[in-house]
Length: 468
Image (cartoon, rainbow, N blue to C red; front, top):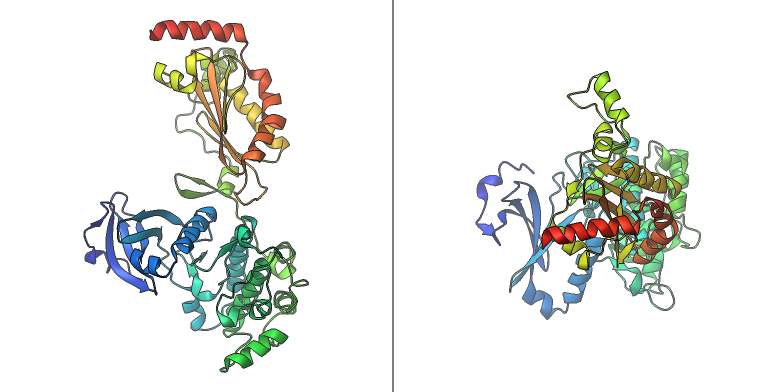
């Protein structure tokens, strides 16, 4: 959609934050508008829901679940929910605006090249795998719910029919019939309970067939005739499909969910693996960042030091401030009296770990470079990703769970010219996993960096007297 033609039609600010533009689409309970963040100029899509209609139809629980799901599944190949706002009459979902439109529109023009179809399918499976790891099942995967951004990357949208693992019945299955008939798995049609993860995989198989063939694998004008074909798994691959693709589709569109291919098996499939790279990302300031960018060697600073200056820095590395400068590390932010009071009641900054739920603090007399090195060692032992920025370090795990991988941030603050406070916080993941990591990995290593009690007490008294 041509954005410049829309920007001339902005309406007054919505809730003082967004300029609302042209209507992009409408459904039974919602309308979607193009909008622009008045502060940043960023284009967004705002889904507007009528509270009265939602309450009349008893859908308030459904809306709350959709919000919770969208906040749980933040992934580069999933449409991003920025925020939710509300007035007495309306609910507003502020979403990422995906400029390229529906994948369906591309397929409607004809089948795609194999490499293009493979790339979209790889991105779809990456997003679905991410959802399933968090206990979220889409249940309405089809080209109309797959969008393309300005870079040609796929974004999964419309989680209105999605569900979560805690809604599974006692038999371990889901029983709600939902989805678009041509993309629905045979076990869903049977209405005897189904594994939602397996049903999503079937739908992904139908999408792949459509991308490659330009038409549906199970297509009949008569709905019951189409259902019969789906039940029996009756479809034929066109002659231009490679043998590897045909074998993969036979596993994706296996009518028996027990023997249907799984996501780990898809990712090991020869046809799928061609050119595939796992998505490695982190979220900071509500934006996605590629972890692969961190692996690139850092560019040299614009004002490189002379050899003699570097040597003098190295020789003076025993003192705290110059050790930071010698390694190109900035000096940590200093703590004022108010920071210290908020950090620890009664200035109790002893050299022991002080635990407060999902965060811990300790005092150290070690150079910042040593502390960061120790954190990097810990990350290496447990195969965590490390990100460094100034005097902060972020550690991120790879093990997926319903709350995502464990993410930990360590911030280093200057207490005195000789002492620092290290604050460790859980930023994401499961609380139990965080506590286990602290007890087994973090504390034993960092214990050696903690300052002795007598010295810390002396500094505590000095600080206390200075603030009186």
